Amino acid sequence: MEGYFESLHYIHPIIDKSDFLLRAENLWFGRPEKTTFKGLYLTLMSLGALMRMWDEEKIEGLTRLEWCRKLFDEAQVYFHETAMSFDLETVQGFFL
Image 1: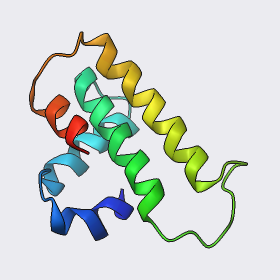
Image 2: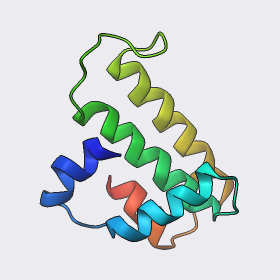
Image 3: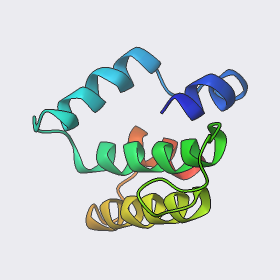
Image 4: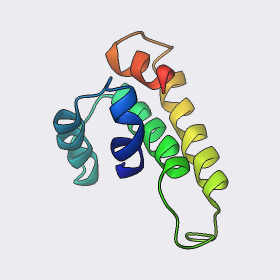
């Protein structure tokens, strides 16, 4: 997440950081969140995997690009589940 918020967020501030972090915390602790937010979360994580500084070549066996693709593919599943509803999280996810 810091990969996005420390770089692209200043150029494209389309996500409220404090709201996003609170909702991400809901995911981390197993509290319910909308499916489209899960897609947005994974999209932001995918983009962040590209943007953050990596000290190592691989994390848990995956390179930066492999993490980006894995997270983006997972995000697409959530967006597909919602039949492409066009709420704010979906639009933000597609923009990212």
